[in-house]
Length: 365
Image 1 (cartoon, one colour):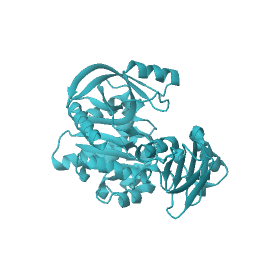
Image 2 (cartoon, rainbow, N blue to C red; image 1 turned 60 degrees about the vertical axis):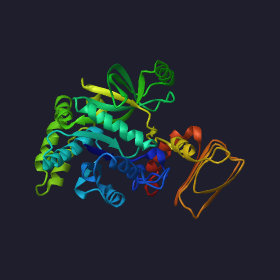
Image 3 (cartoon, helix red, strand yellow; image 1 turned 135 degrees about the vertical axis):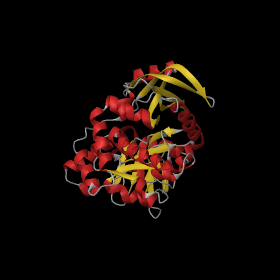
Image 4 (cartoon, rainbow, N blue to C red; image 1 turned 90 degrees about the horizontal axis):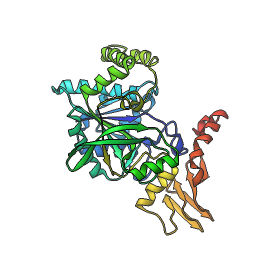
């Protein structure tokens, strides 16, 4: 089994802790490990480090090397610019094919995972991935569907069709359809039916099958990937990659392949998953581990009077954060920025980031 870990995005919704120089996959949020380190720690139970490929931006190569020293440097792949998950995964697949060929493996199962997600039930996650790999060996593209616990409108949904089989005690279903982020009334209906899962963006597939699907549904990208592969190992190969990459169209693996493929299966799973999409999600994750008697989720040193149901996130053990009369608030303190927001408005952090860009305050991004 091989894994492709996508580690190239910039999490603007977790500003000011997540910055251009150190996006959320490279920072500690709930534990003392970064999200990237936690991701590879989970995968270490399933495969050796040499079977893990990390795809990241050119400016983050050093961060990956420093945070995951056990990962072979040759398995850190650099994309010149963000083009969505389909091209990034494509780069990873090319390298997996080379690694497998070196070992004499003809058609391995490959998983695609995000470096900036949190999974609190790591043992069950490993069981689910192992089961999904067995299904993938039967020429299915298997997506891990997250068992929903609320009518979340920030996630895509997967409707399951008939049951295909049961693997290691876990039911596997044919995918009936993918649904983009629905309005709340629709999401509530989905929960009532019991037929829907959240779309986690995690997939398992045979190498030969996914390359066939690229050729069928993303033929231009498939041809560009072949050009990139031909240039691999030659002088100026990265220059060639940049030239080809500039012509690559942005596309997600979901829209480009998963929503069109006739080979889709879903394995519903309760693995304690979160895409950590905003500060409220961070607060919920921290509260699940520890919260004070007033329901506050706290990282760092905090003293509060009349403060409840708030997130207090400090970035320095030397600095004390003191609050009075706060309720349902978010306080995030960094070396150079202090964010204070109502918890109900935490999605608007992205607007602050846009305002900083427009005002030329790039040093705070």
